[in-house]
Image (cartoon, rainbow, N blue to C red):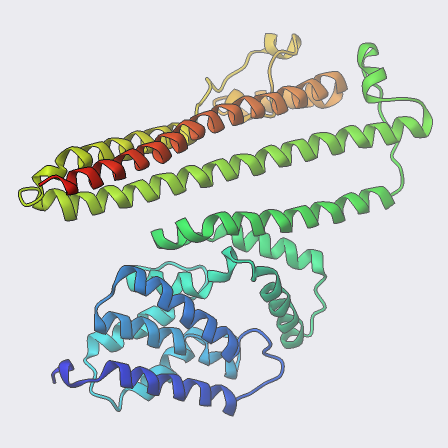
Length: 410
C-alpha cells in the first residue's frame, strides 16, 4: 500500500464533514463547551502551531485529524472519552488507504490529550497545546464560564464561582505548554489569566474575613503596639489591615517574580531558536555567504549574552539552611524563608516556629524581613532582565544592519 495515492487534503475535508455531521447527530444542549465550536477552535489552534513547525503532509494530516476527532467521545459520556474518540476516528478512517503508522499517530495524539497531559513527541505536543490553547488567550474567561456551566449540567452539582476558580488555578498551575511556540506565544497571557483568578479569589476571601466575627487581638512588644495595634475595635481593624497589607504585598511580589521568570524564559526560548536557525541555515553554508560571517558572529554573541543574563535572572541563590538557638533568642533569623532552615531537624524548626508564633514582635519582624528580602530578589531579577532586553534589542538592530551592509557588499 502506497500513501502517495492518498489525497490528504480531500480526506481531511471528509473528516471535517463527518465530525460536524457527527456532532449534529448527537446534539446535547448540556454540552455548552465540548461541542463543535470547541472542536473548531482546537483545529484552528492546531493548524497555527503545525504551520509554525512546517510538518510534512502525513504528520500534518495526523495532527489535524486528531484535532477534529479528539472530543467526539464526549457525546456518550465524559468517562474515558479520549479512548472513545480514538475508536470513533479509527472506525471512520479504516475504510481509507492509510498506513498503520499514520493511524497510530492519530490514535496516540487523541489519547495524549488526556489529563494530566504527557505528550511523547512533537505531534502529540501540538494537539495537547491546541486543546488548552485558550489558557493563554483573552477568551479564557468566557470558556471557563462555559465549562463551569457544562460541569453543573452534567453532574447536577452547583459549584460556586469561587470554588471553580480555585479548581481552575490548581489546574493551570499544574499545566505547562509543551511546544516552544506556545510557551513563547501564550505563557505571558496564561500568567495574566491565572493572576486574575487569584485576585478574584483573594477578594472573596477578604470579604469573608470582614464578615466573620472579630477576633480578639493579641498584644505586641511595647515599641510596636502603636504600629500593629490600638484599643478596642480600632485594635482589631488595624491588626486586620496589617495582615492584609502583608498578604497583598507578598502576593504582588510573587506575581512580579512569576512575570520576571516568564519574561526570562521568553528571552531564553527566542534566542535559543535564533541560535538554532543561525547555526543550521547560515553557518552550515558559510562558504557561500562568507561576507556574512561577521554579522552572524555578532548576532550569535548577542543571543548568548542575552541568554546568560536571562539565566542569571532566574538562577536561584541558596542560603546555608541552618540557624542556631542564639539566632532564635536574638530574633535575627527569618523562619518564614526556606533558605534559613532546610537543613535543620524538624524538632529544631518546630521549636523555633513556636517561639516566633508566641512573640508577635518576632513574627511581624520576620514578615517585614520576608517582604524586604523578596524586594531585593525582585530588584536583582529585573535589573538583569533589563540588561538582557537591552542587549537583545540594541544587539538585534545592530546585527540586522550589519547583515544588510554585508549583503550589499559584493
